[in-house]
Each structure stands twice: as C-alpha cells, then as structure tokens.
Amino acid sequence: MELKDGHYVIQGVNISAIAEQFGTPVYVYDAGKIVHQLKTLRTVFSNSDVKIKYAIKALSNLSILKLLQNHGAGADAVSIQEVHLALKAGFVPADIMFSPNCADFSEIEEAVKLGLTINIDNLSYLKKFGSQYRSSYPCSIRLNPHILAGGNYKISTGHSESKFGISVYQLPQIMELVNQYNIRVNGLHIHTGSDITETDVFLKMADIFFSVARDFPDLKFIDFGSGFKVAYKEGDTVTNVFDLGIKLTEAFNAFCTQYGRKLELWFEPGKFIVSEAGVLLAKVTVVKSTPSTTFVGVNTGLNHLLRPMMYDAYHHIVNISNPAGEQKQYTVVGYICETDTLGADRKLNEVREGDILAIKNAGAYGFSMASNYNSRLRPAEVLVINNEAKLIRKAEVFDDLLDGQVEISL
Ligand code: LLP
Image (tube, rainbow, N blue to C red; front, side, top):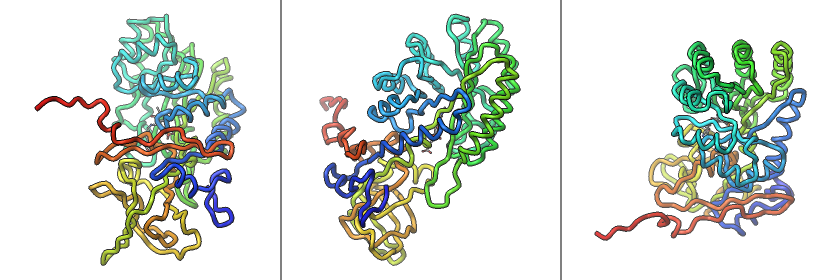
C-alpha cells in the first residue's frame, strides 16, 4: 500500500474504491507482495537446495494457496482440513508437510494414505507409527530444542515447557523406537516460535540438528520451521533474512559435506510471506470523545483481527480517507462488546465518521483467526492481482450464522 497523488493504492488500484466496491470490513491482499516475499526467501537461500513450505494456517484462502502453488511453494499443514485445502488448491501430496500437534492419530493414517510428508511430535505417536508402518513409510521427527524464542510466550514453541516436539533430551528414547521398529526417518524439524528477530536462534537450531543428524542415515531434509519477523511499524526490528541466508547456508552446506550427501533445506514461513501483503479496511462508525480519550469506533473488531487483543500485537493504522488531514491522537476500537482495542494512542490524520481506516499487517493470522463472536459476520477477502481487485471470498450473510444449526422444537 502506498500514497500516490493523494490516494492510497495497491498496485495502482485505489483502496477507497476497493472499500466502496466490496463494502467494509474487507481484507485486501497484494498478490505482488506475496510472490515477492516467496522469491526473497528463495533467493537468500539459493546456494542450498531450499524448499519453502508455506504455513497454510497464516492465511488459508484457496486463491492465495493457488497463487503460492503456482509460484512453486510447497505447503505446511497442521490439520487434515488444511491438507484437503492444499490438495484442492493443486499442491501435490509430495509437496505437503503434515505437522499436526495433538491431532487424532487417524489424521496421520489419512496423511499416510495420501502420501504426505509426516512430521511426528511425540514419543507415543512415534511408537504407534513405528509399530503400524515399520520401514514401509518414512516420517520426520519434530524436535523441541529447549530454546526460548519468539515475539511472546504465547507464540513460543521451542522452550522446555512447550507442548511441541520431542525434547532433544529424549533422543535416546527416539533412537530406541527407531531401532525397535526400523523406522525410516527422512527429516528433522524444529519450529521455535513466531516473530524471532535473532539470526542466532536459527544457528543454534542448526547446531542441534547437526549434532543429532548422524544418528539418522535416511535424511532427505532438515526443516528449520519458521518465525521470520517482519516489520509492523517503521523502524521495527525484523529477522535479517539476508544475513541468515549467508550464515545458515554456509553452515548447512558444510554439514551436508560432513553428512556425506546433499540434503534439502526446508522452511515453513507464514508471516514472512503474507503478513505485510494484507490490510483490513474498516469504516469509522463513530468518533467518541470522553474526558480522557478520543475513541474511533470501527465496523470490525477482535472477531476479525484478534492479534492486538490476543498478543498485544501492534498493527499500524492509517486513515486512507484523509491523507492530508491534521495529525491527532486517537484510540481505535472495535465494535465487539468487550474491551476491543485495535490501536491505543495512535496518531492518525483527522478522523471523521464514515472515513476508511486501513489496519496493516493483516495478511497473516487475520482472516484465518476470525470468528463470528457477537454473531457478527466474517468479511469478504479481495486479492489485488495484475493491477485488478478480485473477490476471493464473499462476505458472510445472516443465513451463514444459521447454517448447520439444528433448531429443535421446544
Ligand atoms: N511451522 C509451524 C510448525 C508452525 O507452528 C508455525 C506457526 C509456522 C510454521 C509459521 O510461523 P510464522 O512464519 O507465521 O511465524 N497466531 C499467531 C502465530 C502463531 C504461529 C503458530 N505457528 C500470531 O498471530 O502471531
């Protein structure tokens, strides 16, 4: 999104016009930015055999999945439903990594039938997998590295108290099962969390992988998960993927030489690919001054964008209707009937009722975490592609709220 000749545009398409055409609230994504981010990651790791498995959970609209598939990404799925979305979008089973956590074992059985790459994250399932499939079907192992990293505790997955992965200290138990059932381990995986700024975290993960890999002679890939942090505001600290690309590639290639064979280097980015590509457009319903604060109420809220209330996440907000207006201080709040702050004490160009606000970084974990709380309807999604705004999901209508409900006679 950029300001051009006094109007905010995405790929030259006027954003106010998008709000008018499709109504508000509406999620708008920039296909060009999504593809650019995918290419950036491929470029920085281009000296290894890198595979980018897009984390579907970040934004799972079918058209977004198709876009990424068309540009050569693989997919990272955490539920059998995400798997079926990926298949519908055209991903072939071999390009889908299935990394469920605490899902029913029947999902793993289905994934085997479909021919996916399977990532196992607890000893109980490793035992079940081994006794059921022995060496007939390979699996990858998700390790818990005991590293605390990530933007906040709720999105940290690699620390010792996290439910994710098999502790690296349980390697002897892993080996016992692998040997007992002759399990073919084709990959090792770690995902330490989301919003990681330090390159060092990935290098520490590399050390762990490299120290255990010699126990697994059948490896095809090593998967570093994700956690690349993007900018949420100007001057924000981000993961320096260029620096990481150089350092990790060097370490990885040296390791492969030692291992005796070239392996694939996998990542599963969600935020890096789609976060900055999305905005949530909302209409200002009311400007409400109290003795302490000027609130700007909008026709969306935590039901559509949970991140500010769930993680105290900062999402930059821009008044696209009044770019030249005087800057004033506001607190932007949603229409949900509980504390629902989208942005506290923000400087915005003067806000008037009816203005359109753009809430930035809404591409990742925006729509995918949206709900019908307060019996509100979920918004439309629009993709700007080849300089054209296209509807990729209709806004819900009242009947969608009733869909599936069984009205009993009382
Ligand atoms: N791989 C695995 C196994 C994951 O669990 C995740 C995210 C990813 C990859 C992608 O991570 P990313 O590139 O997006 O950082 N709802 C939270 C984020 C939860 C992330 C869960 N796992 C948020 O809005 O910040």
